[in-house]
Length: 252
Image (cartoon, rainbow, N blue to C red; front, top):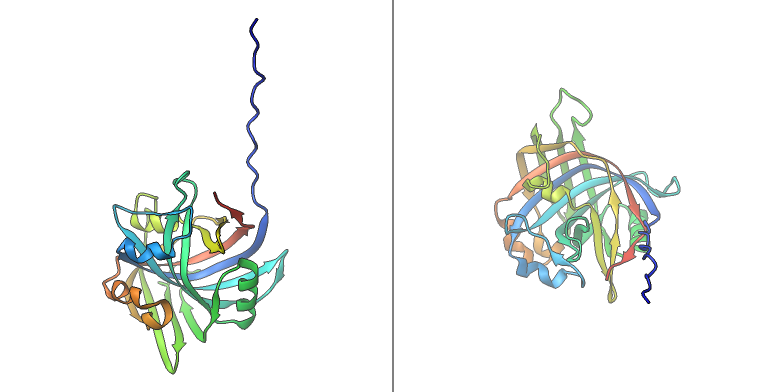
């Protein structure tokens, strides 16, 4: 006598719920090749470093975060953010589960510092910053962006003038590799949390001019002084867009 086992019903994938909405605007990324040994101490458990053509990268990024809030209620009108980040993936699904980890984040708003630390379980630090830009939203004007942040009594500076739009930002390109890592991962105690982030496709500009001075050791630590003193592998700027950040899930 033979019996037939009942069909196995696959467990449905539960999409995380929306945590907050925001806008990432006037984003500048200065990208550097780095020895992976520098990044391994910062790698949360359950993840692995992601490589492009056999190289690992860190990115110094500046942007203006606007419209951040909960259920449509704004927390802050807008503030500047400076961060150093690197690129990771989940070994069980390296194509679909990839994102960024942060070495350190700085923001210009005390209200935003409180909100981000409480909402994202992350170490944001308030720092005096200022920024200016022109040319975004205009087809006839080339974008220019400048960010400054104050370390002790000295102003650090990142100034970018765009050159031309990048037509190919597919995942097989260097810029596409960086843009393809939208989600965020962080260590929380012994856990690793995954924040899914969705956004539309961004219009990207190459940089014709990039001036950059930063007290790297004071802000991010001595291991990153030499890597960030090298010539950048790439520099790009984007107007950005509205984004969605979803409630975190613990990875296994």
